[in-house]
Length: 426
Ligand code: UD1
Image (cartoon, rainbow, N blue to C red; front, side, top):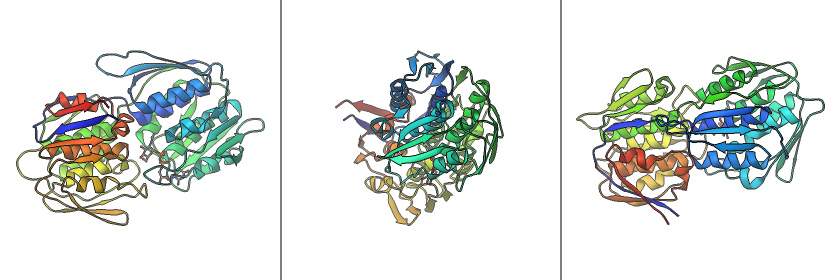
């Protein structure tokens, strides 16, 4: 298994181009199943999760071709064409590797009236059930059975528009139900929908395919079903979690680091927490510069919330930052029940953190020291890198495959700013 090596304490300055968002690319790619037309995506990040989904789509019969993309965007282009689908079964081997594979349920059922998709199973950060997906599709007239660990969904005569109020805000269920509803008969109203920018990006693409969606980005989404969708070209939205992660790196190390090619308003919650911690932030139309001078970081409490609140996907990274703050801070995790595995690993750097239910109490220390550590999940791996950049000595991060699921060329981007970080192949 590859390891990452980081010699901490180097000043970091420079410019980091932000990649396309994993969390936008994945639902967009599943939307290709809704049409027999050709989909062209640009700014697609080169990540393991994207490759896993390409494998699943090809297994279902979809054609896929990865291109080179443009130099400024870094990312690749991706052509998908689901003209002839040979299977409507998404097998356990692929869905268990990545939860977002489950989202093929909506488009398959919407277009073909049938889907057999493996239950994703639990994952390291919590139980993550799929009850909302199932209730939403049932409201639209689907018959759903769970057999041998698979969700088997069928419709008699297609899905019907429905009013559905979700009991909690789920990003994946919103994507899935919105996609399914595009081809349903009549109007669907999704209430208590997720407002994450990636939902807006998916709706924008679906509308370019001929769907009739209004209100994406608000709590109520209205979808008027149409009989057919066509192919389109769509650039993937910039990754706000990657941007937020590098903004935290800049606040930790002092910067200045300029992040380019992003939508600054999508990381406002993170930026305001960083300002409170003492960072100076300049915001342009599609760029943000973060720096911090002089004194120690100030402690800041954060609570993770659905968008536009502070994102759970930045919780671990922000906790890493707070380990060096000048005082205690409280970090409350409200989205997932078990997303604190990084706490034990941060302790290996000398961080002082105690857990109290859904709250982590971080007592800032004056310095961190390098240690061998283990990445436990995708975002937690980024937290370890942030701590390692600030720590004295050489850190070795094990299990970096978690990182490759969601951060494109992180060591290259950090090296370009002066970090001493390299990968050793196993
Ligand atoms: C997506 C993101 C992930 C992010 C999360 C929350 C992608 C690929 N992943 O994950 O990075 O951390 O949003 O912002 O975009 N829940 C239920 N029943 C359901 C569905 C969800 O109880 O049927 C619960 C989950 O267990 C969790 C909460 O709802 O506690 C939010 O999960 P959800 O928004 O669905 O997360 P994902 O879409 O899986």
